[in-house]
Amino acid sequence: MLIALIAKDKPGALQTRKDNRDDHLAYIEATGVVAQAGPLLDDAGEMAGSLVILDVTDMAAARNWADNDPYAKAGLFASVELIAWKKVIG
Image (cartoon, rainbow, N blue to C red; front, side, top):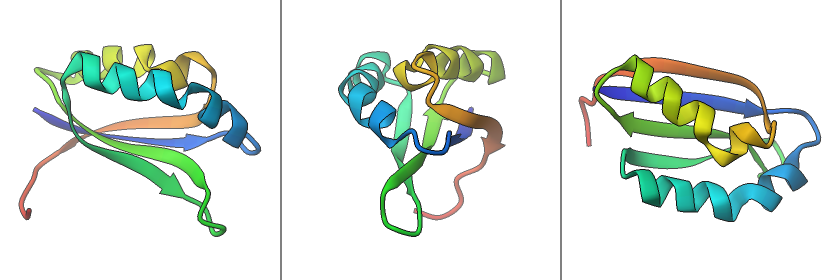
């Protein structure tokens, strides 16, 4: 099951993102369920959120992954949405 995780950072939290980026990337590699990922950008081109496509068994697994992401544990996000997604192109 593909799940789109769309997270928006708290205002002014760029340093929190930078401070936790290595742990976040290590978590992605270690868990092996991320099909695609990248930062959302603000008008200045700075990282301001995340888009992660998870390939997991169910929504509960996606929620568990999201809750254990080092970014989430650091309190980076103002909001997180998990939405079932269907790949059609690409």
